[in-house]
Length: 640
Image (tube, rainbow, N blue to C red; front, side, top):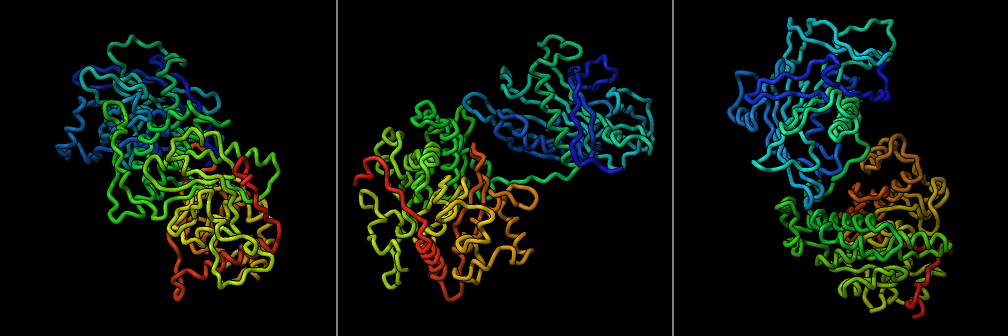
């Protein structure tokens, strides 16, 4: 029989004591009664159950949005009954050890649960003990069978079962550790212990039974020890109770994880490639507390929570990323996220963290292309509110933000932020000081514009060497960011693409093979790029390169957004940047970022003149096409 590739239907049901299934039996010093809560068929074997609950222990945030993460305090393997270490005994006896009939402990993890909202919930330490059912050849065990056609659970007589891997866990018991008088946080169910148990199906299936019968490898059960002060629960449990709903979500998670382990599920995207999750989350909690008031003071016609917390997330990433790449001694960054139930925002160590020597430049929506009014209006509602600049400037980082028009928010920011925000329409074809010895193409915009086009209304040059460029959903400016970074000797850039744009027109998949501006190949010049398309590159090298981009899409990466991101990465390579990618932890479906921080060096071209010449050739080609037009700044700035 072939293994199904689609996850079998999740079929939970309440499992009261009258269902005919014996609950866990304990021999603790204080009598404890285990109450069955919920069960379902398990379409996987014991070893996959162990992988599922291990992932559950290490990543509780996947099952609850109220939990930020867990921190492992200790992790001890228990080899045998007479070979335990002293620290294992201490770990298992605090809280009071729970001996379960027919099971023996094989592993104990001590973890601390951290809340997503430290001001509302406190942290909680928890002991997670893995048990094996300790069966060997000749041991009689009770088995559970589920009829796949009628969906009925039934118990069959005891039989002999041989377990070759006797240390595989088939039971996980979670026990919270509370001090005297301390209450459980809201995110934890009101129980003294919680158990997730796997019971094998010992019934042998004949070859003529339907394939769906193979989906009943065993049963999953969730049971709990309720507080002594709680009244006896109804039998079976009330499906509308909070405990049942919590256990239902937990059971669904274990069912999904077990099936994923069986089918070799692989995550499509990987977060925290450049900044560690723990460091990011801790700083994010601090900054969120500092700027959450802006949600109620939002001045734009957009979703305030999304935009405020998105820019807080981007600022958090940039501050930690800059610290890592510009620091001579990259010491760890730690914050107390649970000090008396609140995040400490009084200390600001990042005031002295390393940062780009030339500051930062946020290219809000300084769109260079004259698009229809309806498109511009949509874009105005999406970007350019200046909040990212406000956060970075408020936290001590020097830089500027430019946009084609001032937003309502700008006038409500402090003076330090207002002077860093500028109404400016960026023209990439002439905003960089050009080499006077280079002959401009005929008809170039640079012929008719002076070098002070790089200045804002106060005469400040935005593109100084060492500046770090930021493009968050910069749309038409997105492909220009690595080009500008190359020409101005930038320290690096972060680009978070959204709408797909080429240099002077909308980007489409078909345009790659027809436009000389959209095709790149090492060793070729811009004049012959139109005949050098991506499909002619070595297939293995191309696939390996795409694999490093962390695109998140399955299959051949043929969607327009995937093709666009691949094109942007190749453009960055063509401009001499070593490509790095990060899937940012921000509330946006467009959270993929491409980062340039290191330059590729070619022997004999230490100054990177080859890459600058490629950038100039792109600009020359754009000018020759004649499609590119610069938008006039809007509002009073447009009258200057």
